[in-house]
Structures are given as structure tokens and as C-alpha cells.
Image (spheres, rainbow, N blue to C red):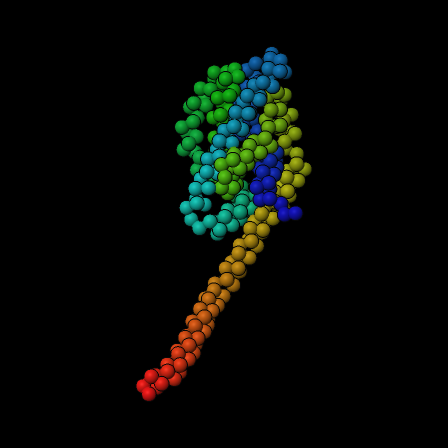
Length: 283
């Protein structure tokens, strides 16, 4: 059975989230650890509550961004020729997966230029995020998580690009939700336990290599299948147009000629009959 492209996008986003935990800890782990440091005497349940409040709100902002990306992709898909752009979206989705695999396997930061696209937005959000961080408590953790989900990040933005290629609001949100869930274990650990333990769990080379290979396979299949589908579609178009250009006129002409021949025969018979009748009338 052929895998569904949407399912592969979800699986790729989840794998990318799991493998990008070390990267996420580098950018957000300090914030997660600071939440726990503010209440060093808090019980395990209290620290877990803060961790879940921060991270679930962060993932919610990912899902919202994914929904917006999916809406933009759907709008673009409706504005132009659907079939070629749909194939192009699937090829781009495969290339995004390959770029994520290259980062995990070889350290190639091919998608980091995407971070500059969100720098302006983050400059507007950062002051509000700072106020939420200083407020403390569960409400502050929720506000900080909602803001921190918009932090410019090459891996996050690559998954947003993947979400846009789904050309669907719910699927775009689901892709980013899967990515966020993949980052959840290490980020919650960074708050509940110790950042050093979380970092050691998320930075294992085996995890990165396995995830990279999986993303490599997902990307090759997605892009390759889309290109194959595009070639088949183009072949069908090429074979259909010449046939229509030759067959239809020939068929029309044959019908026209048959009708003309029939008319001529009928006219000849009528004239012969009239020719036999008129002399009789004259006589």
C-alpha cells in the first residue's frame, strides 16, 4: 500500500521534533530551567505543572502558526494551476525533509536563513515575552510559552514550510503539533529535573543518526514519488492532446462526408424519380 503524503509529513515532523531536542534545549532550555529555579523548593507536581503549562502553550503557538502556513499554502494552490503546484508542493516537502536530515546527519545548516524571516516579528513579541517571564506562576508560564513558540528557529521554520506544503489548515496545524510533541520529552525534563540530564538524553548521536536516516527516507520517497507522478501526468497530457487534435477532426469530416454522400444519393434518386414523372405529365 502506498504511504499517504500527509501521514509521512506528520511522521517526519514528529521525528524532527524528537531529534531536534538538543537544538530546542539550546534555545529554550534556559527558559525551561529558569521556571524551575524560581521555585526550588516546589514539589515534583508543581514543577511538572509549570513544565506542562509552558510547553503545551508553546506547542499551541506552533499549531497556530502551522494552521496559518497551511492556509497560505491553500490560498496559493487555489490561485494558480492546481496540478503542477500540487506536485511542486510535494517536491518541496521532500526537500525540506532532506534538509532536516542533512542537519542531523552532517550538521549542514541549510535552512537557517529562514530564521531571518521571523526576526522582525520576534522583535515585536520579545518585550511581551519578557513581561510574562517576570510575572511567574502558571499564568506567566503559559504566556511565556505562547510567546516563545514564535522564536526564530531554523528547524521550526523548516517544519512551518512543510506545513505550508500540505495546503490545509488542519493538516498544517497537525504537522506543527507533531513537531512540538516530539520536542516535549526533553523540554519537560529540563524543567522538572535538571537541564544537564535532559541535554544528555537529547544529544545522543544514535538518536540523531536514526532520525536523520528516517527523514532521509521520508524525503527521498516524498520528492521522488511527486516527481514520478508529475512525469506520468505530463506524459498523459502529451499523449492526449495530439490524439484529440487528429481524431476529432477526422471523425467530424467522416461524418460530414457520409452525410454529404447520402444527400447526393438521395438527390440523384429524387431527380430520377422526378425525371420519370415529368415526361408523363407533359405527354
